[in-house]
Length: 522
Image 1 (spheres, rainbow, N blue to C red):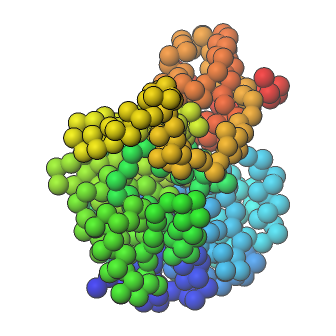
Image 2: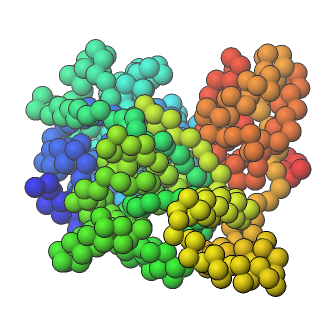
C-alpha cells in the first residue's frame, strides 16, 4: 500500500496546498526524501528531471520554516527558466502558508530585487551569479539561512558554476540543512557533498524504470487556459474515438469535466477516490462493455482500470511527474495495438512538457486545434465509411421498395440527402461556433541580436525556434535577417514562449537575446 502525503508528517497548511494541486500520493523521490528532510538531516536526491523533485524539497522546507523577516532558505538553479519554474511551483504549494518568495536571476532589473529583499523575503530562488551579485552588494546575507537547496547540481557543474556554489556554501553557517539534487553524481559533486554537507547525510537514489511507450503516438495541443474545454470538445468531435480515458489532476476537476461533457451530450462518466466501490465497479463495467465512451479519471482511480481496447488517452491536465505521464498513456497502445495520446498544454506548462519528452526519449508532436471545417470533414468521412459498410450488407434491401416508391416523385440524390439528414443531423450539430475559441490576434514582431554576419539563415532560425519553443510553420511569419540582428514575426501568444525558452540559448554561434520589438504589432 503506497503512502499518502498526509502520512509523511507535513504541516496541515502545506498539505492543503498539495491537495489543491490535485496530488494524492507522493512520487518515489517524494516518498523517500520528505521524511528525511523533515527529520532535519542533509540529503542527496539522485533522480531525473520530471520526477517531482521541487515538491520533495519545498514541502519539508515550508513545513519547518518560521518566517523571521529575512531570508531563511535559498534554492539555487542552473538557469533563469528553471528558477522561474521552481519559484512558481513553490508558490503554488505554499498557497495556504504565510511566506514570501523571490526569484533572482540575470536579465531582470536588480533594483527591483533589492527593494523586495529589503522588504523581507523568506525564500530566494535564483541562479548562482545573481545570488553572488546580491551578496557582493551587501543585500543578501547568508549567515542566518537555515536551508540551502542545490537543484540540478550536475547541470550547474556543467555550466561552470562550481566555484560560485562553493563560495555561496562557504558563506553560510555550518548548521544549515543542505539538500542536493542531481540526475548524475560526478566526482566534483561527491567532493562538494563531503566538504559542505553533514556526515550523517542520506543519499537517496530513485532509479526510473523504462520511461518509454513505443506503441503510442504522442501529440500535444497548445491551448489557452480559458479554451481548454472548448479545445477538448473539438478534438473529440474531429476524430473517430473508441473508449477514451481523460485524465484530470483533481477529483473536483473530474466532476466538473463530466458535468460539462454530459451537458454537451457526450457519453461520459467519472472515476475518483471519493466514489464508493459500487459506483466505481458499475462505471468500469460500462466502460469495458462499450456502454460508456469517455471515462474521466484521476491518476489514483485509474490504477484499477484494466481495459485493452482504449483508442485514446487525453491528458486534460498535465500530471505531476513523468512516471505518471507514462502510466497514463500506457493505458492505450496495448495488446499489440497502436494507441494515441493527446495532451493539452498551456504556454506556462510548455517547459514541463519538454521535460517529459526528454525523459521518455520519445517525440511529442504538436497538432493544431481542429477548426469547424476540420470537424465537418471528419464527420462526413465517418458517415460515408459507415454507409459504404452498410451497402456491403444485404440487410438494407428490405427498404428497396420504399426507396422505389420515393423514386417516382423525387430525385434520388435529394432522397439520399434527406435520409442522411434524418439520421445524422444530431451528429452534425455543434454547440460551438467558428469563433468560440479565443480569437487569435495579429502577429508580434521580435528582435534577435543575431544576423547574417553570424551566418544566420531562415532555415537555422526556424530549426532553433522549433527545437527550443516548439513552434511550427504556422506560428512564424516574415523573417528579416539584417547584418547584425534579425526581426521575425510570430503568431500573437507565441512570443512569450519564444522569449522565455529561446533567450540565452546558442543561435548560429552566439547567445541569443530575444525581445519584443518596439513596434509591437505588424
